[in-house]
Length: 335
Image 1 (cartoon, helix red, strand yellow):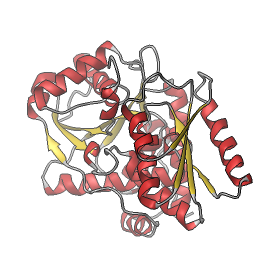
Image 2 (cartoon, rainbow, N blue to C red; image 1 turned 60 degrees about the horizontal axis):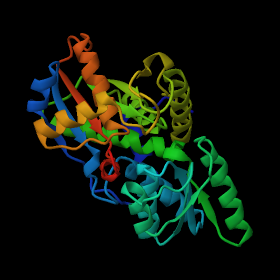
Image 3 (cartoon, rainbow, N blue to C red; image 1 turned 90 degrees about the vertical axis):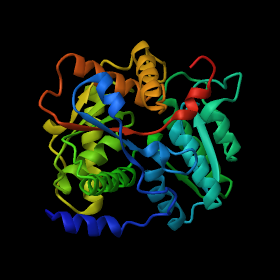
């Protein structure tokens, strides 16, 4: 690998095959009423919930690269999985539909009594859905592999996508997103010092950290883990960033000491709404008319608010919160 200039990194990014799905750039929006309510820095949102494909969400960015790779490999079916309210699975189902591919979604647990939210949309897009019958989230990984073997034995050509699209290609897509935000911020004379986001599978944060380092972008990135302990998330992010740097042929992976992942926002578990998350959802909705989701963005924004209240981010003049989407999860009973 070589140490590449920012211009060289951008050229390498442009050479990565992709199937255009998203409407980009996603909006870059000031939220002054929200900023006044929470205190702290001037606040902006990067609205990846408005990417304009398959009900949006930043998973669409990674799928542009992953489906291009699947088509180049001659695949006829995408196989992925997660929980029944997965944004990634829903976006993958939409991608399969527009690419003319089959789709099998593998979910942990048992089939819920009602098909709501993202599960309903996944089926609407035409995906076949299966359930592992196990509460363990890692059962999905085994399920994806088993379905791929089954399809291959039947003469199909499956393409496996791990939970959250957490692959080197998925990470590269978020390097592109970091560059997109920087261009918007420069144009608006609103370059932030801080970017805040939710951390699940780790691909989004890995891409933003790699992009910030490789393109010499002038902010720090802070993630709030909504899925697993911070140490485990940090190891995943470090590995994914390294894999993406290798894919691009650059030696610019961010050092581990720059991976700022904070915990304490998960509550009772992944996908289970929290009191702080609900409060964050209400605050953003009532100040700006914008909807967060209970699994990712509400918990992360709640963590940001709590850190501000504790005196965190002192001296920061401008922050951006990455809205990664997920609103279909609001349309599930009790959420």
